[in-house]
Image 1: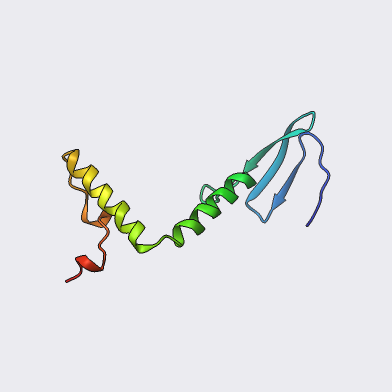
Image 2: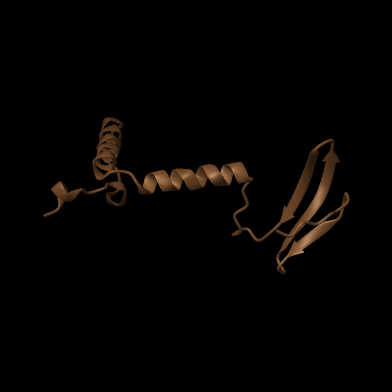
Amino acid sequence: MLVLTRKLGESITIDDNIKIRIEKIRGKQVRLGIEAPKETRIYREEVYQAIKKQNEDASQAKPDATRAVSKLLKTDAISDGVTPPAAFVAKGPQDQE
C-alpha cells in the first residue's frame, strides 16, 4: 500500500484520468474531491463491501427461490394490470417446451 501525506488543497493523480484532492479537514474527518471519468465507479468502502456481499448472496440463490420471486413479480404485475415484458419474465425448467 502506498501511503502519502497531503495538505489541504493538495491532490494526487492516478493514471492520467483520476485526481483526488483534499477539500476540507475537520478534526478526524477529511473531505475528498474526486475527478474521474463518468464510467469509473467510486464507492465508500462499506458500500462496496455491501454490494459485493449482495452479489455473492444473489449468485448462490437456489432455483426454487428464484422461481418464487419470479412468480411474485408476475402476480404483482398482473394485479396492477400491467403485463411484464418477456425479457423480465424468468422461465424455469417447468416452462420449457
